[in-house]
Length: 275
View 1 (cartoon, rainbow, N blue to C red):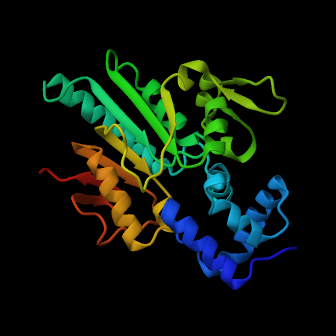
View 2: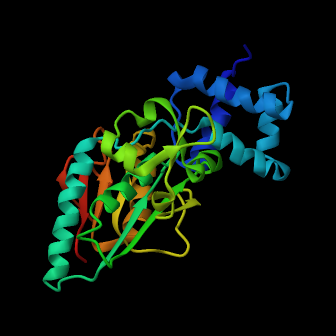
């Protein structure tokens, strides 16, 4: 199999870091080679050197997006980290109590950042539907973004099979999914799909227009970022959080020294500090 030489590896690392903030480790050389090789085959280009020239050219901007799509890791499944969703259940009840006391409006805006193929935002939507009695009359919005166009296309279709469905409780599976026209797949029902707005967004860039989210999910993403990129992403996230908003992280992510303006509540849970 065609493999990257050290010079090509360094150039691809620099491009990927500049565009996405992701630091590709030297130990990932074989994996990176295989993923970029898919794009060589798709474009009919014979060598990594020729492909580098393409993605660095003005004419190669579309292919540059396709390359970033190819090298992005997109493994996820429904209701990943059930303790996060258990916390969310409590959080929704607390919000409802605040509304009844006149302390906040009937509004909940949620951002699923780096949403991949859609399992996370659809899981969130199901949680809101499960709590529809206490959220009756609320303005509920779920905004789901990813840097990868391909996974967003999959997310919008809402069709899934296999391992990604394994963590869904049977009652939720029957209530929120239906058989798909595509054999072997289940399809998320329209009432769930309609709750989610999908959009392409690079976490390293400023969100336009800016928004104010009450709750942000940014899970299992920053493990691929160095300290500088983490700080930049978290600044972008914080700028789009409500004054008392919460940030849910992955269970193994370390943002020590990068989380300016965020108060740690759990190893995976942060709240925006006032002021």
